[in-house]
Amino acid sequence: MSYDPQARRDTALALKLKQRIRSDGPMSVADYMQACLHDPEHGYYVKQPAIGRDGDFITAPEISQVFGELIGLWSAVVWQQMGSPARINLVELGPGRGTLMRDALRAAQKVPGFLGAIDVHLVESNLTLQQVQMQSLSDSGRPISFHDNAGKLLWGNRHLGSAPAIVIGNEFLDTFGIHQFVFSQGSWRAREVGLNEAGQLDFVTDLTCGYRPKPLPTTLTPNEGDIFEGAVTTSVLAKSTFAACAQQRPFAALLIDYGHAETSFGDTLQAVASHQAVSPFLAPGETDLTVHVDFEQFARACAKAEGDALAVDGPITQGEFLGRLGIVERASHLMGANPAKAGEIELAVARLIAPQGMGSRFKVIGLRSPNLPNLPGFE
Image 1: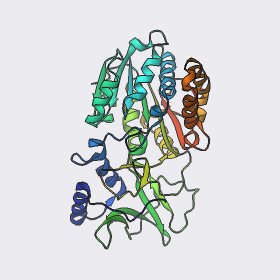
Image 2: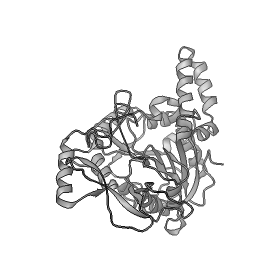
Image 3: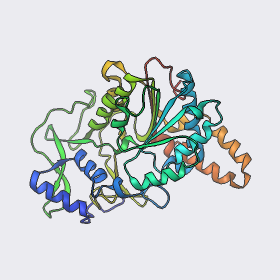
Image 4: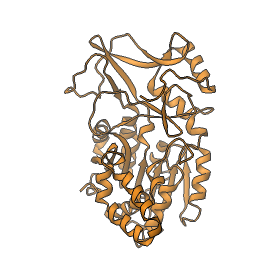
């Protein structure tokens, strides 16, 4: 931990949350994340541009155009697996600056018939980013629809009709809240956000003895002080939103995020500001909050979806996935066509697939209608 864990700043949201805690008592970590990211007045995603070299963090599509191009070609192959329908809904969850979709649609032109079949849907609650996305995709040649909620878009036929759907989510799952539990004196107890003796936001422990968290595998034995994170919100997303969409139309989803492939103990809640880790309590509403995705929990929730609506591919590492899609070959072609930028292209691609960096820290999971074959990259 390289930051001061005691650092605090009384932002407008911090004052609002303190008052809420004084009135109602401590809140779950999930509720704290929800407020910090989505509070209608002060939430980080409501008002902060966040992404890019001048923002708080940078994502894979901003590192290299090859990333988005490969996702576009991946989508084209899935479209072909679905029988090359005349209409296809291409949905991106949390599209950032629109860079991934822009690069994906450019690559889509290489597959006859695919680009003309696409209806683009972007799920974005940040109005500032919506404007950036509009500008980025202004010459895409495809209709662009904006939505502020994934559930409202994917549930039912109002927006998507009966056409198949391909859903892309890069660094989307990590923003969903988790419940934390701490093992203390032989029992699991809820870890919450309350006020410390100085009246500042801090972690507090509910001393009431609780049951073993349901998502925790019976094969894991805790030690004193161990923390477990239950990914309740992403489980609901899997069982309801994705499964509901898959029950109504041919469906495929590609979700990429940093996290662990197997369930384990640990506190992964983190805040980021200006590309640096900071305390989750430093400046509520003004810093990004994320958690590491527990892909084992998420995959298990998807596999248990109602009506066996979802088949699961993966997870595998981002390096392995991009390697199977041909990132090295695509980068070599790009370097040959742009010799003056060859070094820059090589470094960017290496950053995406490096075993000790994003290549292993980031995982990729695929969801699909059970009657579809394994998705590209997961064969």
